[in-house]
Image (cartoon, rainbow, N blue to C red; front, side, top):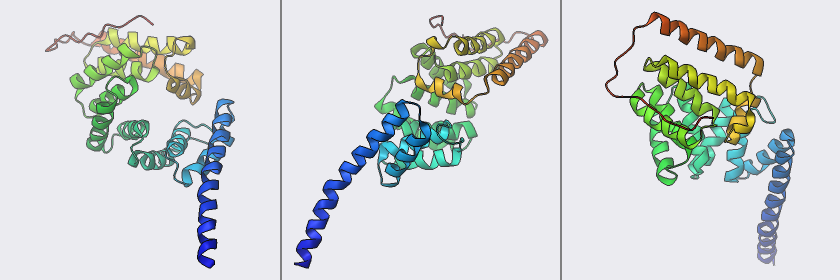
Length: 245
């Protein structure tokens, strides 16, 4: 009789637990959609702790972009890694990008992105991540190939345009770098032209006034570099033709 009761309890557990998870997921998604990020994070965190892979990614993302809690890169990395171990593609991308931003574990990041791009070769954010890792490895020509492709696919992605500006500057192509930084400012002003949700989340983390001042100072510094430099001769033409945003 005891064994039957245990079995019956196990059946109830396995029936009820998925229903609880589904209910929690719906509550988390509803809260996220209405902008109640504190509630969404709390609900996703409970799901993530129970092993829900998508919730693990979402908790990582919310810590990464300061949605519902102050930005915490350590927590973001922790939850991205858990989701990535289960093969969550976007978590793998975000984990690799986080490493590239810190300039750490770049070889591991490359390996992750090779898997990601094999599965999704035409996703702009993934292509851009590979480009930024290569940039951090100072492989600027390879980085340009990836970042240019990403900008052609998603011309309204702010971080892609920032990366392209930095690569142009490394080549001494100051006019192109200035143009890209100006495009970043224009995209912030005209947000209808933003082409990915991550750009909105990136911008909501910024103090926009100081963010714009920083970029304007960067543009001024590039103009100074241009005035003090002699034109460089490159081994090959560096051109990224794209639609005007």
